[in-house]
Length: 305
Ligand SMILES: [Zn+2]
Image 1: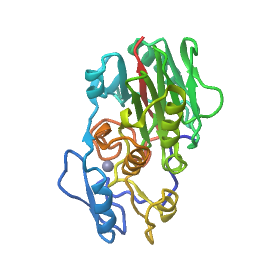
Image 2: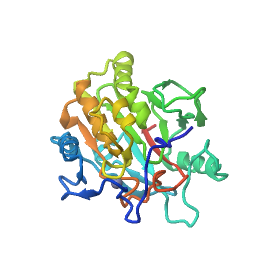
Image 3: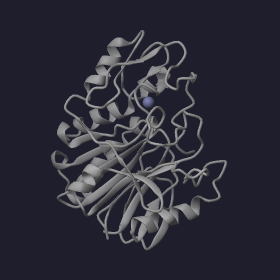
């Protein structure tokens, strides 16, 4: 099972963001983030919007280095030894699909992973079969090439140079964690199940245990994912996320939930950034499972060799 988020009630209107029963409206963008209010749940809408108070927006910029990807430019500019980003569909008629495990399979995906490795100039890319759980693999001297970790995992961490961590996504949140002091990184795959199961606090705890990370010094970036306006879910998802449970399906902002979790774990608000890109309604040329696409992009994070 890859990043299908969930088989929840959802009907997709032609404008791409409305869902039947609960009309979705965009309020004016606040600090670049599309905030949402909607009929029937205005209180929740405001509550979810308010969690972005104090958070910076950080949008990936398009880069072309043989393979199509966005880079997290603010991190890259500040830390030249870091490489962080996410692939996108590209301009080729055959979109740059990197899915390895889903049906239908993508026969060109293995070669594209190698292309991504070459473009990154890293020695290694590590990834794993993802199952919406919380196992995080620590990589130490894993060897060279495109390597699949043994066993399913939804997160990766390393302090090695030249090891590029990778998770596949298409609406789920790529969660980038950076400890500048220890020069350690972690990259997590956050669908609602994994978020509800606590993959983010687990990742922070792993960094603390392994590299002595102080959460007050940790940087967290929540990458391109389906936004709070586009992602309508059933009450069971709100329940799992520990949120106020509506009587019927309603939009939820999973990156907002993650930002709250990061704060609760001790990460200062000013150290948490949120991508301005939505996989469904954004203009990042990204695949969206909810948008009817079966392809996957790859988020990546690593310390340059
Ligand atoms: Zn959206």
